[in-house]
Image (cartoon, rainbow, N blue to C red; front, side, top):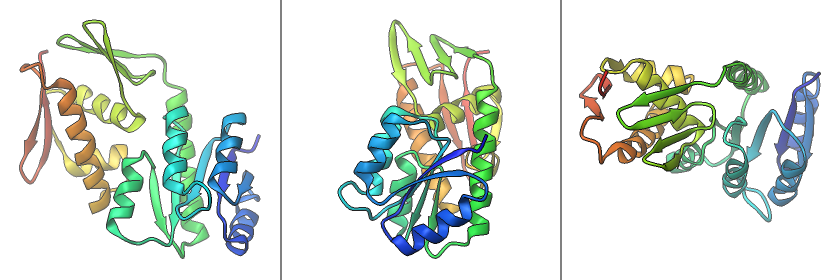
Length: 227
């Protein structure tokens, strides 16, 4: 069965060319505005979302945020003519998996799609697993941290990052290793996104002196926690 892709693009010519290429391998549902796309997302199951940023009615950033409220796992790829660094960072902070700048090559887009679909398949095959660090219980399947009866919800990327830290607890992890493991690439923009997620994790553990995510200058990070 073909994987199903939600594709949102208001440029009809570009949409036709891209969808025509993608439909050789995938089932593609194309919409030309964010509102209609989100209505479809609420009614159907999609394996991956490809979103333009500048969309009518509901723009791509708003659409991505709405999708993430309902589904923290589905991969999201932004395609945009907006080249500013701030736009890329905003997209990644919203939970997007990648941000391609127009004009893009179909070969690169299809490669990205395959990488994220394969990653999703691997994650879905993982059995339920929990980790305990000090007084915190981390559920890797439901992306939650439980402490003293209070639950904190994580994003998929935050959950993957925390799991990597826990599996290498009290060991220095190089920045490039973290970026390649979680983001699939080691570049400046992904590094900025990683720093945001690490700050978020630090806030969750800030009341417990036994747990720290230490910054190792010019090297990486280390999760310090009880054995």
